[in-house]
Amino acid sequence: MDISFKLDPEVLIGADTLSMTGTVASRHGSRIMVVAENGLGTQTINRLKMILDDSGLEAIVYDTIDERSPAEMADNIVQLICASHCDVIIGFGGYNTQIIARTAAIIACAKISSFELLDGKTVPNKFLPFVSIPTGGTNAFSFTNFYVVSDPRHRLIKLIRSPANLCSAVIIDSNLLKFVSDNDAPFFIIEGFFAAVEAYCSSKANFLSDTILEKALTGFAKLVKTGAISADSAAQVFFLASLGSSVSSPGFGTALAAAISARTPIARAKCSAALFPAIAQRLVSARPEKMARIASLLGAQKAANVAETAGLAVEAVRRSFSALKIPVDLKSHNIPLDNLVAACEAARKLDFIANSPWPVSEEEVFNILKEVF
Image 1: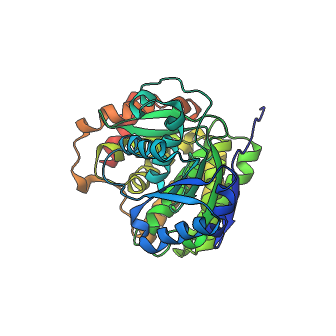
Image 2: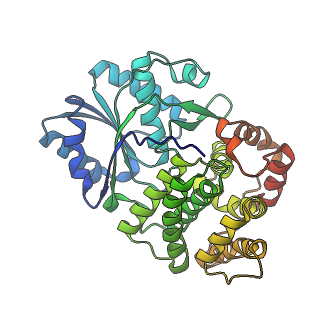
Image 3: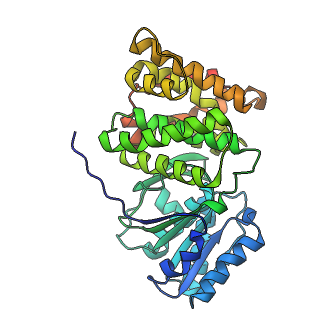
């Protein structure tokens, strides 16, 4: 298989790498738009602003992210960008914050609205340089030239293409990973593990992605077994999972979790956790050798043959759910299946779903929904 691989952004990873933000941002100009997740707290946001100020940069902070869709908030941010003539945009926060800032970086120079972008309007290869400072877990789209976002008009997810070299840098400060001591930490571990498993089993996987993802999977397996999560190990493992997903391909579970979360009040990470066993069962048949490897990483004993060993992976995943006290379904939310069919069909039609190693048919998707809900 031919491999075409180019990692566009510079990546800084480690403790206190936030201190390098001024150096990185100053390469693009002196006026900075910071899109910050308000959950980070005033002290953390002010720290970033002070770092930028000390570098001689003028920072404008937008930290009023609310329940509106990322697309709607991106339009508001673009108005501020145009009024203040900003040179670069920084996304400082979790998954939704990164989507908002990334979308604003695309439409700011294209002079179009987020709705025109969602409707597929072609954008020129001109954009506002984007610096990502993630504070969440694995983002399967961090290093891809596409991502998914919910259309607020009907809450169905759509795929957005990013211009080449849009993301200038990714700064991963392990001290800022907000979930390390959070009650939701187990969900972030499982979500990242799930993303890595899907990318590892993708039909687009290759020796490079396998090398990266096996390292990530080993790290996740250790986190699952111990239930402990340190800032440094989390930063490294989540980075490898995100990178591996870009070299291979995000999976259908990643898309389906985003689709369900867009239609319900259920967090994306919790959707991923609920979907993991159902999709793992399908990967056993589609990629027995790789699922056997995952079973081994999770401590399962080698069975008589590869197929039987692969089957043990699903049992091992379910045991890890019990150990981490994670629910295996979402039935308690009482979400009618009728509310989810259109959303899941939109996820099934995304371009990268063609890389799924198992046939993502309408029937199979509906069966997964019945298992989970």
